[in-house]
Length: 264
Image (cartoon, rainbow, N blue to C red; front, side, top):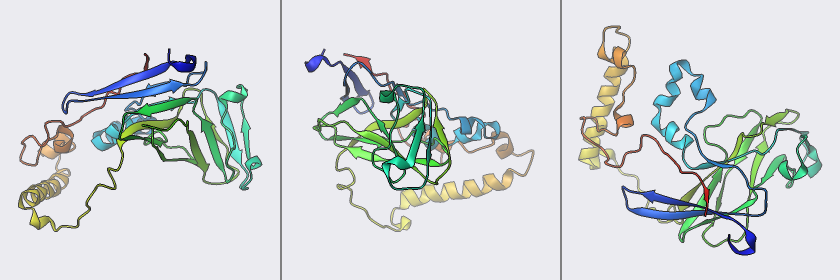
């Protein structure tokens, strides 16, 4: 137990490749503990693409499972009439009021309260967003960045309706939020530069090799007897390989496996 009788759910992030160990703590604020789960790589719309080809895009897969999701505690529907007042959103649900989202800000914004206080180690913020690559018609998630290494304040997750008089729904257990730690000031500390690729001979060489192989691969796809037709898609980036077949990165991620939050 932590002070005030609150349970601290702790996740210790350990990256064996870089030797980094970091705690990510969720202080629960009462008896109603949100359902927080490792973000899965699967998405229904990706399953539904022909031969599930969307999963061939490794950046999509990594983004899908990049962090943890907070799940909706109840079924509900909501509709926005286009007004700016808080009464412009109508929410229908049989769930208790504390489980439902609400209209808190007006302007067609639907608000989920998150009954937990997250804490990261010094120098880390927390990125707050909707579930990545999760398609929902008529409403979009609003992203946020929270300084969770010092702040004693909880946050809300907000979605904005994109058109009036269109009913949206969330199911119990459906994710409404995705979170992960990020280094503070990483953007401010960047030194952005525009550089002709020819100024970096090695990168230019590999890019040219990839560009040529890509063009040939696409052209060969029309030949039913070609190696490209058998291979179906180029896998160099997926495998972490350079165009010449050599290893491009010793810490290349093919999948992420976030661990569960567990009581401390």
